Each structure stands twice: as structure tokens, then as C-alpha cells.
Image 1 (tube, rainbow, N blue to C red):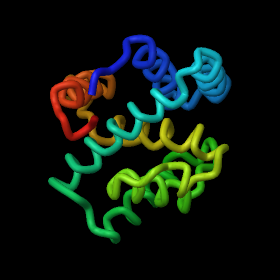
Image 2: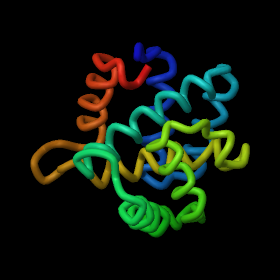
Image 3: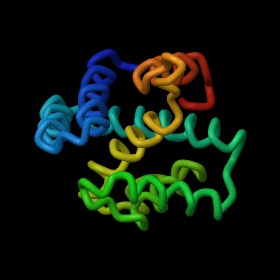
Length: 152
């Protein structure tokens, strides 16, 4: 998958706001993506990022129980935006099964859940104590996504 530089920059900006739990900046970032007409491309990138991380965390496709545990964790940690566990679970399930997101999420959730889930997973998996911050891990994830045919 070739990552569009414009999309990548806007997605990173929104992810950074989500990581820092800055609601005003996060919402402004979502608006910038929409105004640029890049919401679809941003969702495609976020799904690829999420898929890579979920497969990495579980060394392959997670079980239903593992998805539930992961959704619970993400939802609990992102309480600052009242992120519903059911929406996170539906999103993660669709990512793993490569189902269309519009079939499992409302239009409102489709705008927010992928960003918050990806941001949460990036911060959870990164190792800042070893010098690998979430954005460094994202660099690695994006490099794999660009080289792989699995994300096209």
C-alpha cells in the first residue's frame, strides 16, 4: 500500500492529539482530514495500522476472547472521549476479518473509533523506556505497510 504523504501527515496530527487526549486538537484534526477530502484514505491507513498492530500483539490472528479483552482495554483507557467498548470491538473484529467498516460502525463512530483505537494501540505497544515512542513505532508500522501487499 502506497501511503499518501498528505494523508499520513493529517493522520499523524490527529493521532498525536488523541495520544495527548487533547479533545479540541483531535476534533480539529478530524475536520482537517474531512475538509481535505481525505477521510476515506485516512480510514484505509488507520485500518492498516490497526491490523498490523493487532496481528503483532497476538503473533497472528487473535481469538474472539483476545479481541474482547483488547476492546475492553482500549475503551477503558480512552474514557476521556466516552469510547464505547462495543464500537471498539466491532471495529477490531471488522479489521481482523477485513470487513467493510460501514457495515459495523455508525457514520459518527467511523470517524472517531479508528483514530482512537490506533492511537491507543500505538502507545500501548511502543516502548518509551527503551527509546521507542509511539511515533517511532508508527514509522516502523508504516514502513511494513508500504512494503507489504497484504495491506493493499
